[in-house]
Image 1 (tube, rainbow over the protein chains, first blue to last red):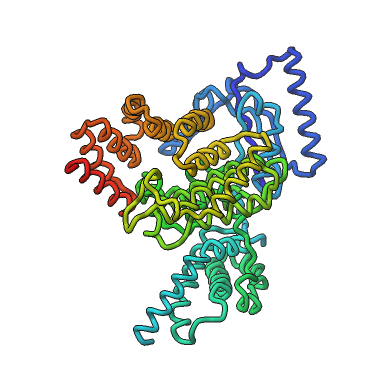
Image 2: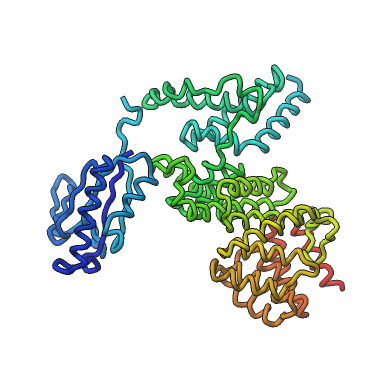
Length: 120
Length: 406
């Protein structure tokens, strides 16, 4: 099954760039990425730029409305994601708990939609 | 089919489902990996059994027959959905063969895997209990709703959401890895205890024995995780409580612990419970189930050691800070002779336990003992109105009558 691990965190809670804690966190991400590759479960993943760079768009009555900012103004923001392919939720939760940001924020584990459950 | 035969077949089917529904559902889920499909298929098979058994008589193994037919019905249901057709084809060769029909023990016991799935931490705690009671205990949605002080539609939605999440989120149907076992086990023990309590509360008015079911599961868990104090303590707790079952009722009326005829207690079961508790405590790894079992052990003494029980409830409150533990502590205090302290504690619990029947039963008893008759009668009225079983209502009615006409 494929799962997306969505990494949520409040920027002010995470270690700041230039501190030893930041370096430890980044080393942790490098080790995690390597682990995912070695285990052969990684299917994708990216880090996102901050919400101050976000633009939101919606179509209403045929007109495009464009707004500055993220979809929802919350303290914790979506900062990045991984997509992994593992046997079940227990395995996905194990990987989620290894993400360095799990110590500062929250990792949400969501199964991806299966558009072809019969496998044909 | 003649009416008496129809009644006989219905009775036979009811008996099989009462006894083995959990086992059948677990076996079906093990093969189908779909809770709802398993429930629907077993229901289909039960409907078929009524007509088929009526025509040709009971099969040699009704359980094996139900499992085989339920499995076919599940595949039929999958075939009717085009997108599931391939899954149906893949499952078809796995239909249990005729060998299953000869021996009900051929149906392996998948209940342990099922209970770990039902008690998975990805489900919310209330859903874990509800799902285990529904699938393993075979309780109806209404019975579970009443045990939870919940409305039946709310409970129905809760069960549907939990089943849907297990399937969609890929919650595995397996016993957890060794490193996850302690945490996952605690979640399971809590559910086993609640199943036992459900059986204990409903008592003989429900003729499937949930208490025995819970004890069976606790014994299985003991075998799976030998040397685990909390698992042993959970089994000890259930045995010590279950040993008193014959003394709990006099006719149709519940009997308070202090008034029970101890000659009716199952003494070998008490001895087994005490021995298992002793083994658990010697492991020096304390936990809430050991405290609960120690309380049950104190209750088995004659007379019960109420001061010690009150102290143990105070210890238990550290693990489970709930108003219900406070209520039990207040009862122990009252029984230990500290009536004013107990009444003060009861008063402070009025709000959090506003819908909790045992709260009013305790208030009625101790307000009565304190001579506060009108308040006691009011509490009796609430307790009787909220009583979960006729036995409890009968007990309370007699106590209330005694209070009015001493």
